[in-house]
Length: 237
Length: 259
Ligand code: HEM
Ligand code: SF4
Ligand code: FES
Image (tube, rainbow over all chains, first blue to last red; front, top):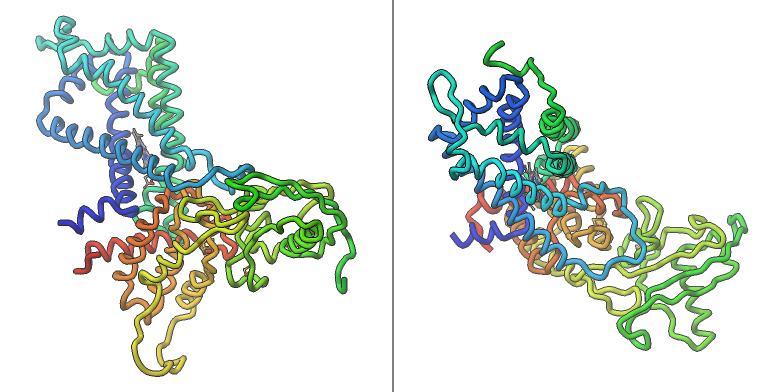
C-alpha cells in the first residue's frame, strides 16, 4: 500500500483528490438548493420543516451526509495543505506584478475556499446545530397531527437580520468565484482536456458558477424582504 | 545598422543585482542612452556591461547561449513577464523596439525556491536536469538509427508531439506560475514522448518517474491557473498537463511499477 500513500501525497494525487471532492460538492449544491428553495414557498414553513425532518432522520440521507462532511473536510484540509506547500515553493515575490493573463479567481482559490469554510461554520452553527442538538426541541409545530421542529422560524428570524444576510451574500459571491475557476479546473486535473469537450465544460462551469450561488443568495435576500415565490410551493400546487 | 530603421531610444534599466558586492540582493538602476531599436534585449545588456566594465564596475551576470531562441538559457523576468512582453518569444529574440523611449525596464531573475539565484539574473535550473534524468528519454540500447519511414506516424500525431517537443527547458513556466509549479515543463516531455510510438512503450513508467522527481525537487502544485501557458516562449499548451495527469494515473493504477 505504500504506492497508494505515495500517490496520495504526490502533486497529481492530491490534485485528483481535490478535483473529486470538489466535483462531489458540486453535485451536492443543486440538491441542497432545491430543498432550501422551499423556504420561499410562502406556506409558513410547512414544506420546509417536513423536508428538514426527513433530511435529518432518513438513514440513507444520514449516511450520505457523513460522506459529505468527509468530502468537505478532505477538500478543505488538502486545499489548505496545497496552499501552504505552494507558498513554500515560491521564491521572493516579483517587484513588478503582471497577472500573466490569468484570472483573479484562479490565483485566489485558497482565500476563496477559506471564506467558504468560515461560512460553512457559521451556517452549520446557526441551523444544523440547532436542528441536530436540541436547540429546537421546545419549538415545535404540528402538521396533520405530527410534530416537527420549527427550523423555518429559526431561519426566517436569522434572515431578518441584515448582517447575516450580508454574510450570506458575500459568501455566495466567494463561492461563485471559487466555482468560476474550480468547475473547469476539476476536469483538467482529472486529465480531461479535449478540443471538443473542454469548451463545453468551460461554458457549463461559467453558467453553473453564476446560477447556483445566485439562487442561494436570493433565499436570504427574499426572506429578509418577506417576498414569497408561490411557484415553489410544490406541496400545494 | 543594415536593414534597421535607424531609430534609437533612451531607457533606464532597473536590474536585480545579487551576490558579490550586492550581497543578498537589491535593484540597481542604469541609464542607457541611444539604444538602437533593432538591438536585441541581450545586446542591450552587452552594451550596459561594456559600459560597466569601462567604469570598472562588475557587469551584470545573465545567461545566454544560442541567441536564436532554441537553447532556453536566456532566463529573466522583464517587467513582470518571463522573457518579456512579446508572446511566444525568448529574451534573446526580443528587440528593443518593444519598448518606448524613456521607459524604465525592470529586470528580475526567475523566482522559485527550486531555482536558487546564483548571481544577478543567473539561476540554478539543475532541478530541471534531474527531472529529465529521471525519465525524459527513451531507452534504446543497441543498433543504428532506424529508417525514418519504418514507423509510420500520422501527421496530426507527429505535429502534436512536435508541439510538445518544442519545449526548450527554459523554466519560464515555473517563473510565471504563482505556485512555482513545473508541470508544464515536465508534461511537455512526458507528452512529447508518450505521443510517439518509440516513447509510448515506456510512457507510464516515465510519467511516474518524472512526476516523482518533480515533486522531490520541491516545485509547487498546479492549480490550473494558466500563467505558464501564457508566458511560455514556445507556447506549450496545458493540454499536455492533462495528458501527463492521465499517463501518471495510468502509471499509478494501471501498471505494476512503483517508485
Ligand atoms: C461548496 C463548497 C466547495 C466547492 C463546490 C468546491 C469546489 C472546488 C473545485 C471544483 C475545485 C477545483 C479542483 C481542481 O482544480 O482540481 C476546488 C479547488 C480548491 N478548493 Fe474548493 N470547493 C468548495 C469549498 C472549499 C473550501 C471550504 C475550501 C477550504 C479552504 C476550499 C479550498 C480549495 C482550494 C485551495 C482549491 C485549489 C486547489 C488547487 O490549487 O489545486 N474549497 N474547489
Ligand atoms: S514549457 Fe515552455 S516555459 Fe516551460 S520550460 Fe518548456 S519552453 Fe520554457
Ligand atoms: S539564448 Fe538560447 S534561447 Fe535565448
